[in-house]
Length: 289
Image 1 (cartoon, rainbow, N blue to C red):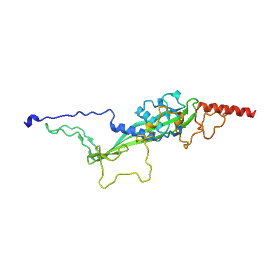
Image 2 (image 1 turned 90 degrees about the vertical axis):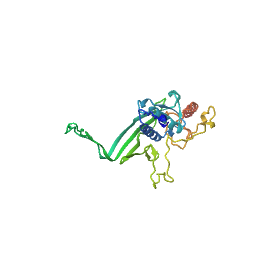
Image 3 (image 1 turned 180 degrees about the vertical axis):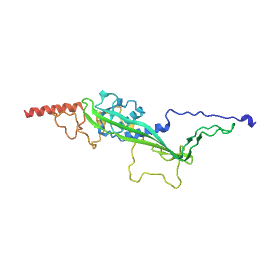
Image 4 (image 1 turned 45 degrees about the vertical axis):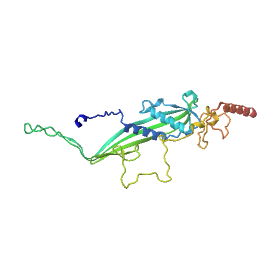
């Protein structure tokens, strides 16, 4: 009876062309690099993101989406067409990639010369000595170097640049006396053992000190405004701008134009305001005559 019920089953396992660890490292490096870019200088402005210079950057779509998210989070008003925007932001990537290295504590495998058996019919001599490792470590890291700069669309005058900084994301696997891997790195919240959380007894996990600022990243959840608070078509005056942020002096303002009041944003391109400036300049000229 039991023999008739015996059987076996198999499970088919497949892997993607790129490992999950590699994809996590690259996306984490992109998140960290983009989180360092402060777009608040363009808060409340109509901005178009130009990604044509990213070329064949690894994970270009993810990088583009992360940049767009960071711009919207900083208060920029994204436009889908260049002609609809007052400012153009060009993005470039100097580096988005991974590398790794291995470290062995012990004796690596050694290939031996092949000899004929001393006695006919005897087993052949081994051609290699196996690896004898007390500990073995594999380190893999992803690096991202991303920069953006902004200019006025109509005049091409420079407005702002972010600067370039190299950011890395790391993962480390460790084997001790054949046990492992013990996994640590920026892509893990805690030390893991073969994919599961690993906690050392009597040793507390690392915590952020009291009063220390917690870094804000684009990968974290954040609520900006409840969707129900927006009307069907928000008026232009409903866009809030943080005037406490220092704004750059307009590099494309004509020298002969009348001075702008201190309360007016120098980067504004309101046609009605420009008409008032022209009328004020003409009135000043007539008075001087």
